[in-house]
Amino acid sequence: MTRVWPGGTIGILGGGQLGRMLALEARRMGYRVAVLDPEPEGPAAQVADSHVRGAFDDLEAAMKLAGESDVITLDTEHVPRELLERLETMKPMRPSARVLRVIQDRLEQRRFLEALGAPQVRYAAVSDAESLRAAAELVGLPSVLKTRRSGYDGKGQARAALPVELAGAWGRIGEAPAILESFVAFEKEISVLLARDVDGDVRFHPIAENVHRHHILRTSRVPARIPEELAAQAQALGARIASALDHVGMMAVELFVTRGGSLLVNEIAPRTHNSGHYSFGACATSQFEQHVRAICGLPLGDPSLLRPAVMLNLLGDLWRDGPPSWSPVLAHPAAHLHLYGKRRASPGRKMGHVLILGEDVEQVSTLAETIAAELDRGASAGRDG
Ligand SMILES: Nc1ncnc2c1ncn2[C@@H]1O[C@H](COP(=O)(O)OP(=O)(O)O)[C@@H](O)[C@H]1O
Ligand SMILES: [Mg+2]
Image 1 (cartoon, rainbow, N blue to C red):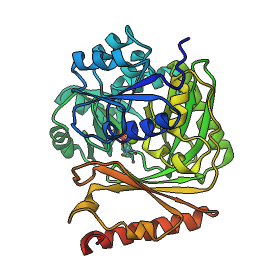
Image 2: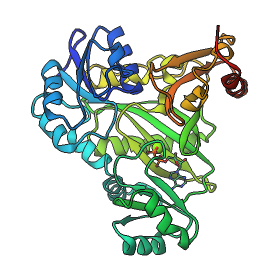
Image 3: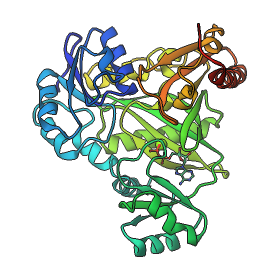
């Protein structure tokens, strides 16, 4: 089993915010970090030791990254499978190409969950107008049509409530191969965050309670308000998924809690996850350090929560009149600003987040909403001098 000690180089496929925070934690621990990313100055490349510039399907660039690296990981699952399989012959890939093959296709992922007997929404494969009609019969309406590949933050998704809306939804996702899922009127959304190490040991970060707006994560709150028994059930399910995939590294399993109090798996992310950002500041070991430990073959760290926390995502909408004023965040000693160094903002784009800590999660939650409202008001009122 390959172990990579501090001083070694971690190669990251993808250079977004997940890669950036991973790089920050890895460098703190004494690792070198190399990043493959097409952008000249992306979030991770800004803080890495080395940047190989290239697209995710650029085999030559990816092989250059592999040449520099002792272990390879990723911050996006949207990397072509052939490329992953090739890199895997050169250096340890964690997670493995096999894990990515299952995860990067929503239909494969659903079939995997089905074979595992994991509870999930009703779904059916869609490849043309006819299979779409059949799928709607099978799963019922309202439903959500999702492209099999390349979706994130609700991209590649369209809802249909009535049969006449199906064709429009199919058009909106570009008539790409898809799955149709029944729409779940859930009670809440949670995510199980876990790390699995090279020996198969699993450790859990506290479950996050997540609120999405327009399909994009807005806030995560920890501890989540769910019964202990349900939390244990969710974590056991997460561990079963990670073990069945023989996954190594952090993993997030997004779940719906139904109004009847049962669990349905929404999706799996075989990497660090937005809903685990709270751990970077609120836990003894962040999800990023934990991922480094897992992929480098080190013992896992203590993921326990030091203080209740709320994470508030900062989307590009706040940049509508240029960079917003940060005074509303900085004025609160309990609030911590994380910005990803993205040069361009656009509506819905994740630009940063605020982590708010406190003794009482209700107070933390109230403060998060106050800060969100102040930021929003400030966004139109002008910048810091
Ligand atoms: N079947 C569904 N029923 C109800 N809400 C859904 C369903 N699928 C997705 N959503 C909502 O949209 C969000 C994003 O969808 P998701 O499938 O997680 O895609 P991604 O995060 O890759 O964009 C979910 O967190 C949830 O709030
Ligand atoms: Mg999701």
